[in-house]
Length: 454
Image 1 (cartoon, rainbow, N blue to C red):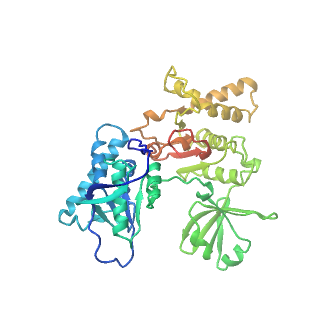
Image 2 (cartoon, rainbow, N blue to C red; image 1 turned 60 degrees about the horizontal axis):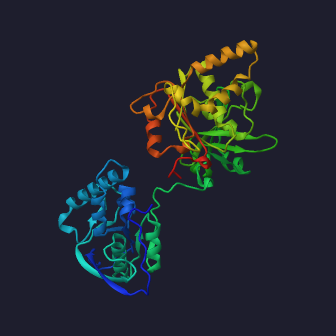
Image 3 (cartoon, one colour; image 1 turned 180 degrees about the vertical axis):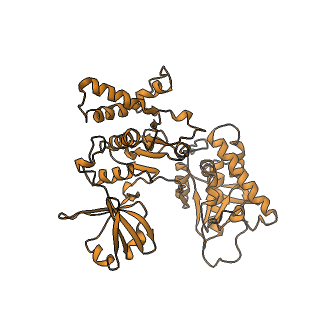
C-alpha cells in the first residue's frame, strides 16, 4: 500500500536539481570487523509494524527526518495505522532517551531488551544535499527519503545501503536511480504450502536397521511403544506422525517423547477398521487416520487441520467431538465458531438472536450433521429426528464478536474457516480455552476471502 499521495513526473527532459534535507549519521571512520548492512526505513514500514526497528538482527537501521515528520502527521485517530504510528514513536522515544549523548554515533537497538537486534539506530542530525532528476518534485517526502538513500549509498561505498518500503512505486523509483530496495518481509505469510509443517514424516526403508540396535518395546493399553536411538531421532518432534507404507506390514506411529538422539514411538489406533468407527465414520486414508488419532486424544489440547475442500476436516472433527461429548463424556458440549466473511456481496443485516444470525454461516455444520445422522437407522424417521435434536442441543454456535473475556471450561471448541482469521483474532480465540478444553482449527489457505489477508 502506498501511504503518501501518488505523484506523476512532469514531462520534459530530465535535469538535475539540488535537494536540501537533514543529514543522517556521520560515516563510520573505521570499517567493522564484519560488514553489516544499513537499512533505511520508509514511513509505511513503521506504520505497518512498529517493531520493525528490531527485526534486522545485526544490521543497522537508519530513519530519515521525513519519516519522523510523517509519523507525527499520522498519529491522530483510532485506526490501526494511527496506533502503529504512536507505538513506533514511543519505541523511538525510549531508545533515544536511553542514550541521548550518543545519537550521532548511533543508539543500540538492544537497549530495550530486544536481544536479537544487535545493530544500531541512526537518525538525521545535519543538513545534506543530493542531486535528483528534475522530474522528482522537490518537497515530497518520498523523494527526500530517496535523496537520503542516494547520499548514504554514495558516501558509504563499502556498505550495502538498502531502502525498505511497503510502497511498490517507491521501490521502483529507487531501483530506477540505481539504489537497492526491498519489501518488508518479516511478517510475510508462506504462500508455498509445501514449506509448511506437515506433521508427518516418512521413515526410510532401512530405518529399523539403523535405529533398532538398543530398542526397547512394551505395551501401553492396546498400543505398543518402541524406544529407539539413532540420528533421525534428533529431527523428530513430539506428536509428529511417522509411517512406513510397507505393502505387507505398514507401520504408523506417533512420536510420544524425544530427547537428543532418542525417541519413543507409540503405535496408532486403526480408525480405518469398522470396529473403531467414530460415530459411524471410519478413516478412508492414512491422513484421516492420523487426524482421528489427534482428535480422539484428550491429552492433546490444540489441533490444526489444513486441507483442500472435501477432505473431511469438518466431518471428522464433528464425529470426534460428538463421540467425546455424548458417549465418553470428556467434554460438556461442542462450541463452533467462524469468521463471518462473505464470498460475494454482503446480504445485509440478519434478524434474530446471536445463534440465528450465525445460522446462515453454519451451513457446513448442518450438512455434516445430516451425514452423521444417517449413520444409524435405528428408530426410523422419528428416531433420526430425535437424535438430531439431541445432537443439536449439545452444539452451540457462537460469534467471534462476543468472545473477548470469556473462558471455556471442558468444551470442544471448533474454529471453522480459520484461514480467514487475522493473527489478532486467532489469538483472541485460542486464549479463551480454559482447563479441560480442546481447540480444533480447520482451514484451507486456498480459500481466503478476507480482504488484505494473504
